[in-house]
Image: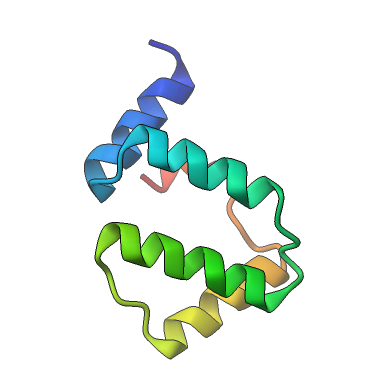
Length: 80
């Protein structure tokens, strides 16, 4: 099993979202303009619905700020 599969398994087990759905989200994200706040909100709401987690307005604002200011950690496997 390669590193990507291990990461997907880890994310899937923690979020209870299937690997196929995670890959679909990643594919969808690649086609979005992340400078557009509407795209970010749409994406976050999609994840929220999949995970049955509510996103408070202040959380949404923080997520938007992190993405728009390119403050996303590059070593994502340490976050999971």
